[in-house]
Image (cartoon, rainbow, N blue to C red):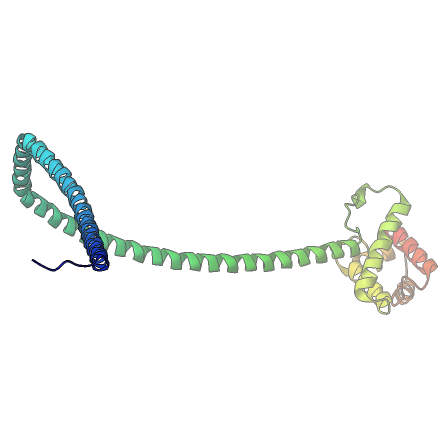
Length: 277
């Protein structure tokens, strides 16, 4: 029989026993907490796996539904395959026709290329002809402008000459229809002024003298300032003029100017009128 312990020893042993129990309880609690944490982790993983499994199941359900739909549409697919086979056979039968058409298109394409080249050459030729036509038109227009300018210059010169002419560029009354002496004198003076501008004022008197002699000698004019052989013969026969009288008249008439002596011309005209009676 073991010896009895004192109260102090029993108390000390009781405290140790309580501590041992508490430590054991704490250890058990820790183990339980660890087991609970592991269980929670496994539970979380299991839930995630369950979610993934549900997704897979949903996907498989969809695939099964699609397979069911495919199986349901199998007849339609077979019909489509048959139609496709028929279309393929038709395409194969028409391949030769298509090849012939392609060959024809190649030939037509070559013909079109030849036509395009021909048209391009014609276009180039037409453009060159157009350029030449434009150049000719420009030259013709320039020539026309030059001729127009020359015509304008000639017209201006003509207008200037008309203004310088005796008529002054206006239509005058016919000389034979003039009855007034003043009008006749005005017409004569206008002609004389025109002749003076052409001949020159210094030589105008000599020109008028030569002009009067020329008119008197020209048989196409009726004006005379000397007696012809026939007039002299008639004067001698009719008025019985001697040769001396005729010579004096000739000396008196020759070499005189129309501007020198107005009375001389009046006397001369009287002699001519008298001899012509």
